Length: 176
Image (cartoon, rainbow, N blue to C red; front, side, top):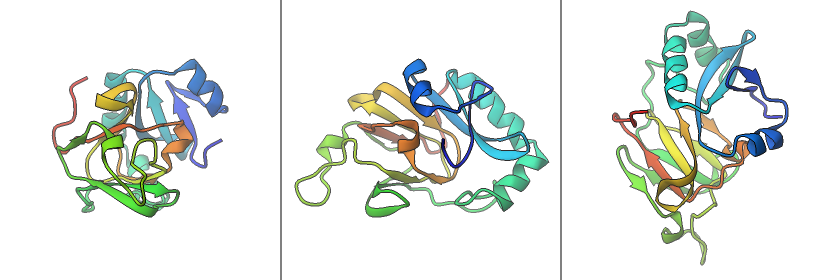
C-alpha cells in the first residue's frame, strides 16, 4: 500500500499489483482530498481527471492539505521549478535527468547516464515541476502512459511505471 492513499475511479486501491493487472492501460493522476486526507486520484479517462482537478482547485480543504500536509508539494500560488527532474534512485537521489517545459524525450535508451547505463526504465523518483507531465512505458510515447497533473516529488515505481519516454507539457498539456 502506498504511503499516500490511491483512489482509482473513485474507489480506494488496497492492492497495487491487482490494480496494475486490472488496469494495464493509461492512467491520469491528480491530487485530491479523500476521506478528509490528502490522496492521489487515478482515472482511466483523462477528461474525468481534469474535471476532478478543477473541482479540487476550488476546494479550500484541498488547498489546506497541499500547503500543510503534502510533503514535497507546493501550494498553487508558490513558485515552482519549470524543469522536470527524474532521479535514478528513490527519494530524489543519484543521477538526475532534467527535461525543460514543452520538451519531450521519446527514447530514454538513447540518453546515457553513469557508466555504460542509460535512462530506459531507470527512473526511481521524480521531482515534479510547475507543469503536468507524462511518462510512457515504451519508446515514442506508446504503451502505458501516466499523465501526472501535480507538483509533487513522488516515487513512480509505486504505480509500477517502467519509463521509456517522458514529456514535460509546459503550459500546453494535451487535449483529452
